[in-house]
Image (cartoon, rainbow, N blue to C red; front, side, top):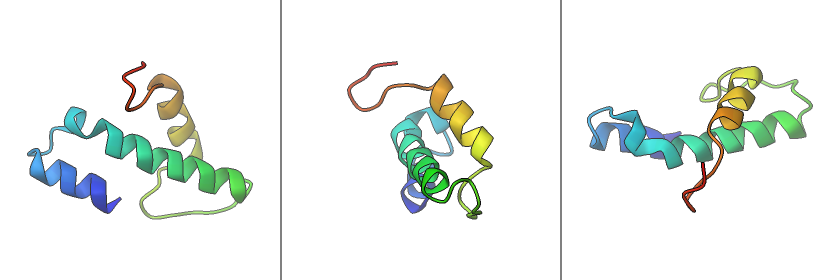
Length: 66
């Protein structure tokens, strides 16, 4: 979450320049929801359905696959 905030601040809140930071945050959130069977809340993480939908709509990563 801190890396994403730093990226957004550095890039004048241009989210497309921070996709990898957002992807890492959402991957972390997804793993947390999986481990806890969805029975957990976290301030930096959106609802589980939002996280999973974003990850499905935005496949890929640093290797450039989309």
